[in-house]
Image 1: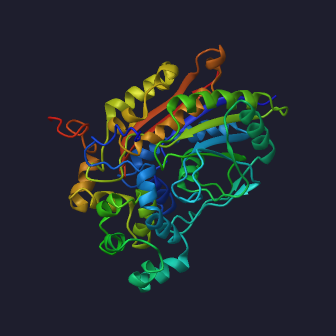
Image 2: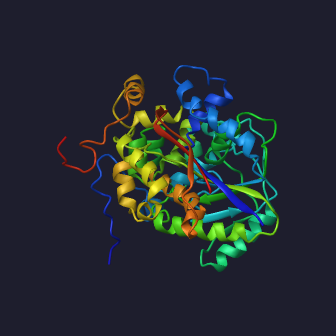
Length: 129
Length: 284
């Protein structure tokens, strides 16, 4: 019997479950390596060479180099691990989160200051606002 | 005997730590957040806890995907603030309480909660930001801290029910410790927030406020809320709120005592991507 995943109908949301974790293992462990200053420096000096040290898929490497966090998440990345890439780039969590929404940094910040993204229309795929 | 005098609940946003460390607390954006903790800092000065049992989650810092313990108790003599990629926060090291921690581990495991025992661990913003909010910027933290890490990174985290029952086992463990210690139990993380995907930035004030109401008055009922509701209503990272149920479960009204007194309640949106919630409950 396959696992019950009642959370796949939540819009714009990927739940990092055991399947995702397995798919993203090396991608996330690469991110983890960026917690060491010397690894951050090596990664910055030559991203491709550094990524090639990890048994990640080509798609995962391309998504990292493009800083496409939505793509990284689709390929098994987890936001707490991906945040290490943002930290290496000097980005705040708000900049990272905003980059996944299709909004500019200012638009996202303004939305948060005004109380954040509304839950109305965002509970379930296909839900009417 | 040791006793739990109160429980404290607070969000742990990393940007709050950065705002403190970079001296931005007086800025218009941050002022309302820190104002919500003015009372709490004064209250802590009067309370003088001997030990804090601090329930938090690690954010891919001490635990990578190599090892994912559901519940992990820190039994070390000290814990260093971690380098999360921005360099370690300039905060004091965290002094543990190995003897009480080992006592709690032994008691709680025998009560059927299979804890992972951690003798070496760096602690990230999940633990140090609540300390900063409650104690400000001292040269040393005012008392020992027992870090208790809960997995909320890989789904599924423990259920609210499991957390609530664990809190009750922790209370029993602490109250069976011989020294007369004043212990606080803290539950941290939340409130509504989502850090990933096109739905990032989600905030649900009504749900958060109802959570605070129920945490105070109906923790038993609240503990039965399934994961799916947290994720759907409070965002993929809002599920951190199950950790608050551990602290609530440790309060004495759950074993027939009086209802706790609400000493402080605070709610503010936003801090970075997150709704900040904060409660102080005192045992009677």
